[in-house]
Image (tube, rainbow over all chains, first blue to last red; front, side, top):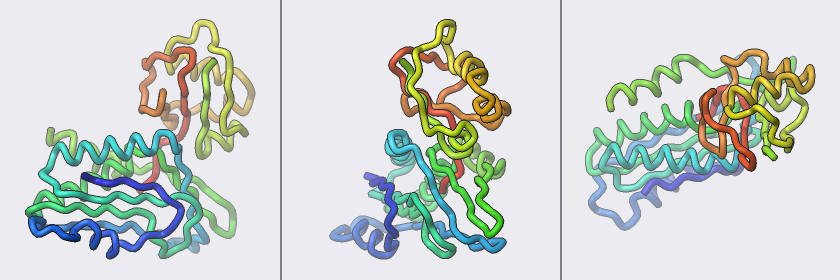
Length: 150
Length: 84
């Protein structure tokens, strides 16, 4: 199953992948994606707010959807909240499968849906003040691709 | 009663992270609730002015304008999500 976690603390992607595959010999592919805070335009920090009661439900629903669409053999989704600095990891998606196609597709799907269907909001702090990040049409379009494939 | 929760710039513009209000008469849907809430204060009016930038969840599930709102439910109002 795909485990989902929301946490303020950082994570070690390599350690999470080791846990995913430990003691298993039937996994042929692990694909992982790590999202990092980009220090564009003199970014000082990035603060992630979320809606705790809904986040858990949303992440579980997104994970269940991925498991329904591809033959997966486990996975992990970690999303951080709170104040992060440029270079810090924000999000980890790692998925195991027998073959690479399912693992690549499920990883991309999980990220696309995380960006558009999970209640997180980013605020960017710079010298001049703090601004909320606006949603991007390109993220909506990326998420919509998976609907078209239904 | 209805439990209202506000997030991100909706929270900042209204100046509250939430409020519990008596279920208003004539409010049956999310759209009704947003119309009614908009008249509560100038801050509410400003926060909810651009409906295209407002998203709503009822009982922790994304809702549309026609989603029913009933006594005892939790309604969260927020901008489009930007996680990941």
